[in-house]
Length: 123
Image 1: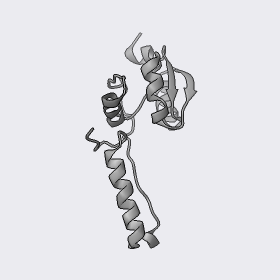
Image 2 (image 1 turned 45 degrees about the horizontal axis):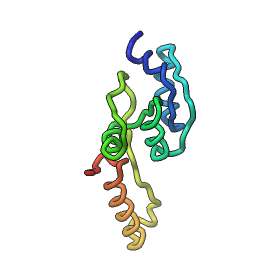
Image 3 (image 1 turned 60 degrees about the horizontal axis):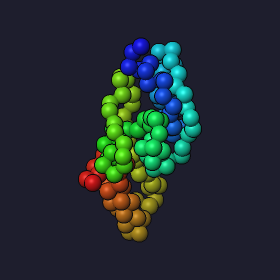
Image 4 (image 1 turned 30 degrees about the vertical axis):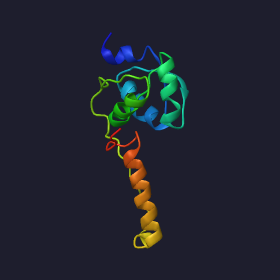
């Protein structure tokens, strides 16, 4: 059994978007994984992963940062050509020069840079 097939033995919790990406890859290789349940946010999943045999697929930077504050380990998936994970902040162009809106965007960016979900996090 190859490494990817072995990953399908364990129960998973996942976010709906990941299910689309990773499961398409598995289907292409005639594999499926067992989804125990789906969660809306990663934060609700870390403690469950730490206390069970479940696996959770997250972007690399989230795995590395989560391992610093939760009792979890991580490794690279034996999968090629999965898309990169990016976060974008969008706003309507009419608000681009609005002082209050600009302040709100800068506050959001500052908070996200410090979050375990940021590739720039320095925990």
